[in-house]
Length: 344
Ligand SMILES: Nc1nc2c(ncn2[C@@H]2O[C@H](COP(=O)(O)OP(=O)(O)O)[C@@H](O)[C@H]2O)c(=O)[nH]1
Ligand SMILES: [Mg+2]
Image 1 (cartoon, protein in one colour):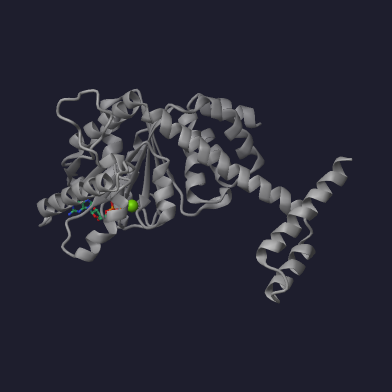
Image 2: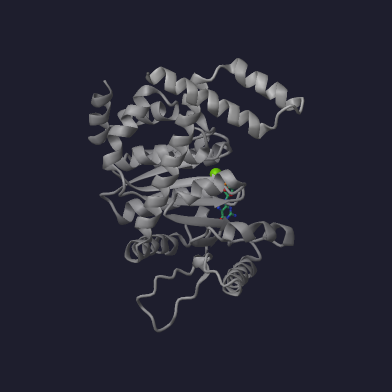
């Protein structure tokens, strides 16, 4: 059953793909088996994260980018994962937007999947990574991942991407700008969308200043952890440094999309040439293994340790008779003794 589905998925059957995505999202046995069987076929897709505040035009940009990528690379398929409950892809937007997004689906080489919750796999990042693996194995060359740039969960999601695009809009308030200091660190490409509105040029120069500031700070600290901000030495063509470019776009009118697409493809080449593609792949696999390990250890533990023991230790800790640390020691000791007994 599962192998039939996988065969169909590998042959490009959209219904099989859709079914496997649901099974994976629901954390079923079929989903797990599918992920395991598909894993050897993954590792080639270019994962592109798009993040930014709600309403900045991420979905519109993703829509335009999907079209542009399809036009340039007619043999390649594009997947869209919208990790945003308010996304038009998930039906949370105005009717006009939804209709505009839906016309993407006329192109059978584009597949849109929305994800409103963290599902069965734990965090949003794990869920997104699992769905990405399915798309990757199904032969999708580009995976566009839209998230609202709100908190750590979203940062975790985009960290799994090869290329992270941070979207901003022309704004005036300093308070709005200060949020972006943190998120700038993860940007490979910056976009000031809604450039038809006043203040776009100021936003670009503000962002540029902040990038320079980040670069200076990383030098002062003597640390180079803000690699993204390093200048490209003029005379060194073999440099592995990437300086995030900033683009102005009007996504709803398709302005600036070609330049942005160029930058995305250039970034992919840069990652491959500098060895960072490999490094990012390793980091994603490491995060994946760590997550699965934590989940399965906890699961195993829960099965072995009676809930009464846990409850009684919580009670003792609340009475301040033992510390939480001591509770953990006793739980681990119980688990160890039990494991010894059962293996004899
Ligand atoms: N004026 C203007 N409106 C835009 C632009 N791009 C998107 N929009 C509109 O902004 C609204 C929010 O866009 P959406 O893509 O849903 O933003 P998201 O929440 O970041 O995904 C929609 O009504 C879009 O049509 C733009 O470049 N200029
Ligand atoms: Mg959206």
